[in-house]
Length: 202
Image 1 (tube, rainbow, N blue to C red):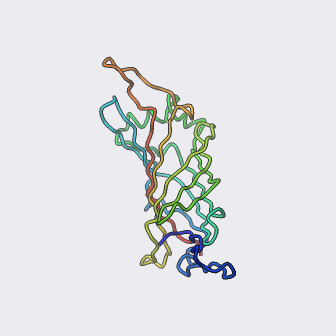
Image 2: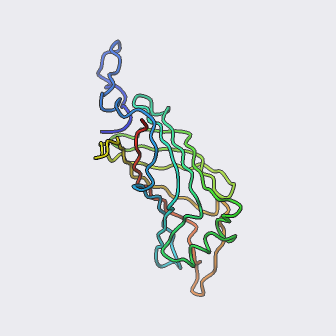
């Protein structure tokens, strides 16, 4: 079952309006992302030979889902850059410094959706404006809908998994160091991973 309604079957009569699946209609509404059950992660290539994984621990986000018109659905995300964690205090400190995220000057990274598309099945694409270091550029995220459920506390939840790739240099993240064997210390390409749980607002 997907979040957004599909187009009516081509064999349907022209005079019959497209029926809205009741399950899909029930998911329409406003949601708040649950940070305690959501992961915003990233992967960077280090020294050309291995991957370093990290995530952000503090963020807020909202979703508006429209069960009949995907283009009316929206998403927002605000990430506290000081909450970055990679498993190394020294590396985290470097990432927060002027070499990378300059968190004193730019404490937040933000995303504001501009378009939502149903790709078929449970797959969707959300496109929006990603702002890092005061630079805003478009980002497309491919999402898979994982389902909807009511948890033991009565919360109506929905879940998504998503991924995207960026070139960090396009947002002004250009610091690097050359390796004696050739190549650079930190890859320009960064893989983004999302595992999102959101609760429907009362």
